Length: 376
Image (cartoon, rainbow, N blue to C red; front, top):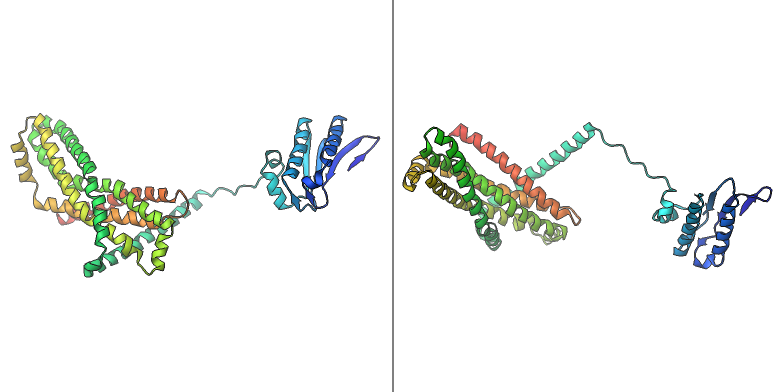
């Protein structure tokens, strides 16, 4: 419809068909409307706003959308605009999907950014919830370890053996390589300073003491965090996403006892063994390095035996055992906390590695203070 003055169209309005804009209702009307639209646009009207009234429309099909888009394109080519009126929310959502019309609807205003205090509060809340989850999970694991000590025949030893081989035997090449290189690096770096004071023969005992008490357990734990903790998180996380953990609960099985306990026991056993292996490899590589500085193997190992005592070795192995439990527990915890979605398992794996390394550092610091106070 149109309103005129002095045989001139002042505006152009389209009132849609009673209930729908579709191929059935358009027919020959499409071309007729387009012709009238072009005539109106080219006559030099003062206003070039096309008003489309969609009140009462209940249905718009693909042909109807194409018709409206065609009208919009014609308006754009002739420098005009389109004004939509009366369309329902459903039809507005349809039209928003198409470029010509998305600009005609007001954009949703984004909420104001949280201030620094709100962000700090949310971060503190998340941290507190995470700490609570860790404490609760630690209690569950401790309870299951006590149960395993009382009921050793009921433990899933087949799962334990499988995980121990995967986390222990399969990790020996990478642990050996890193331990060998660490021994070489420490020896070279220590020799630079000790040679200035004529104390090159003390490099071997000094490096070996550091390896047995600190670096051997620490290197092993970090490598286990990258390998085993991530693997545990991925395995249990995948089961969580696939609702397999819920299925265990439905079947009356304890998921902590069924999934977590064998992995924690494997970490408890494997970590000290790998630490002994890493210690020996590092000391051996250090002895080879000191040959370059003219220190015979006999003198090197004699100095090591006179410096390193059983207390130092037991201190490192105790620390390694704690690290193994921490790495396995954190990996299982992050796996149990896996959310939904395709990226959930990857997020849990990343969190497992980062959390394991952080917890290793925390435990190491606590152990260092306890060692200082007790002399162990």
